Image 1 (cartoon, one colour):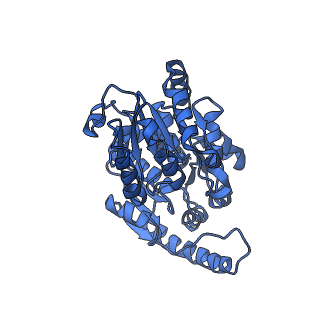
Image 2 (tube, one colour):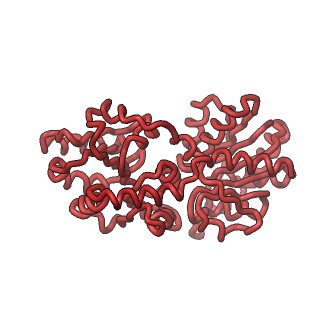
Image 3 (spheres, one colour):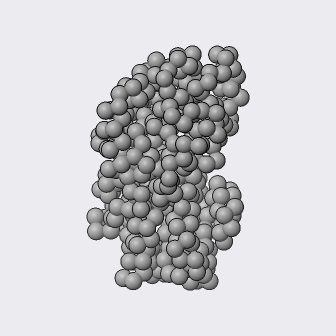
Length: 364
């Protein structure tokens, strides 16, 4: 089987694609892949690092305001379609899947026009412009949230979940906490603002350090590379509490997730897929700087089911953060209810589900 995958711009579009590829490679080693992205995008680094064949096209996103730059974007789109038709004709894929980002536009559109089976995967509760456009042409639309289905042709929608969820499932490893210098037997909070960190979260944590040091639980705080030195300095000023570990980045995040009791994070789709697959309670602080405010809608999907609580960034303070943690971690019944609710929303077999959709559209 030959599969073309496209997705770019942010890790939220790329990591699900890579997770799907890894699952298929494990189950069907003879599958051939071609990943189509942009040279300037994050995908050019992440995909080639995995030794996946990669081809690039030139394309930019549409600006939502009236702009002459959009004329150039339309020109690049049709040139990208032409380039993609050439690549597809050469590779001869059985199916093409787009996992989001504007690069998917010409790739999936070109495939649909060549009558190649096509799928788009929408990670968020509110889809972006590219997937809304492509939904008119593709065979199937795979979603991660029920609420996303209302934006697409009903007969095309299949709830599959996010393939990243499949990668975090495994045996719990309390040794990961000991390797960080923490206890394997204490309740543990993971606070993470994403790979680049998040300044408002940093500020709230810094203001809470002295009080955190007195708590019966322990904290792993992943700052992001940009903010690490600043936060590390503040931690030193309160005497490096034994129950707080600060790290710029965690490479084995699935291992760490399996060892903690509560996650505090942004509300990106990939993060939510991981924590629901594991049945982890969470405090979600949606980024207000994303298109269509989709992170708040993502977070609402969990809070409405009782799997998470939400703290809006403009309400985020040190005392409020501590209060939100204590209301969960210091009440066992609350933790159990949230775990059950999160687990009920998780789709740990998402990769298998998405691959099944691919097989179905090929056979159809």
